[in-house]
Image 1 (cartoon, rainbow, N blue to C red):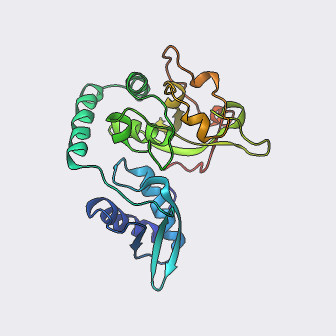
Image 2 (cartoon, helix red, strand yellow):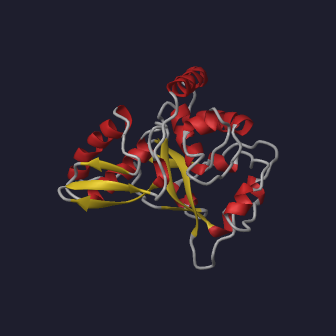
Length: 255
């Protein structure tokens, strides 16, 4: 992620507060930063650079300054909750079991290996309140949407893969979008091959959960064919040029 020198100094402080100490504030997380924007930028980088289930994830909606402190604001009414230690330990054991045989795989084979595993274990499932964003939900509760799928992929890869974000163009989106809108906000993965970025999207390889919550919550959204239940197929690998035909990156400077 492209951070300024000041934002890079904020980053480890946030990591310590949010992960090691586990923020104790239900609606705000006070962190020392020169400006609210620096804090928000460092948080966004941290969110995609860790797979910790302790982060409050996308319930962050902004940042503001109070006195000499910058504060992250969460959605009104949302309270930070943390999974029990036994769930975290169980997740770590599951990841270790999965990762051991994958260490010798090429990044392409590793992406296929993870895609097949998630196809068999974690259907795409969108729910309200941020549920589905963490690896615990993806691997222990067997449900996640794009953010959780991408973060779990990064975790299972031993952090060999990155998470990237942007939009899936409306003609390929899971749901219909407005005519003047670029597409559905989306998160997927990437790695580097000979210094060139290679992108892949495991959401296109896994199944949609057999429920109506996605359609209900997204107001008459239409499932696209490549997201319906069916036979497993390997992920498609995109160069940056080919990616632009289907996806829009938020930042083309990958972190």
